[in-house]
Length: 132
Image (tube, rainbow, N blue to C red; front, top):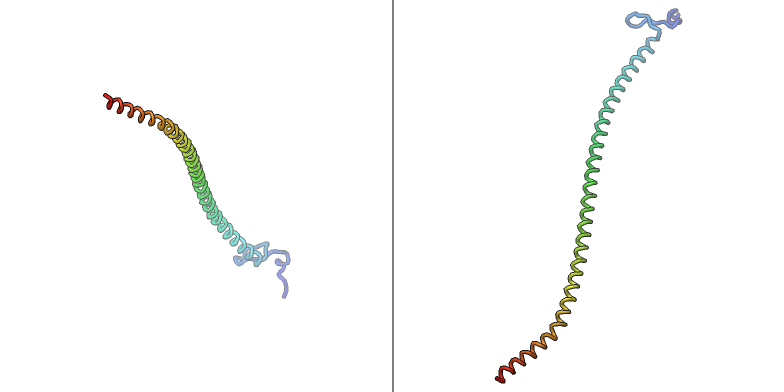
């Protein structure tokens, strides 16, 4: 078969009989690639929207987690503070108990001689009354 002289020069006719520089199959593949690229770009756009929404959701969850973390740290610090206060209060009460025990012992020591003096005075009064 003889080649078309226009084809040898790099000119081709398409299905509408328009003169083209590209071969028909290359032109068709280029159009298909253009459509595939358009679909790909559309899918990438959708993907970016989905990822953007996911990033926003993750950021929101991270903020909530940080807030909860700060609340937990605050609660833990409060518990530590309460524990320290109770420990200090316990130490104060133990010191007060020790002080009261010492005071009680002093009173006991003081009570014994006073009790002896009282009984002696009561005996003296009884004897004095009986003598009269």
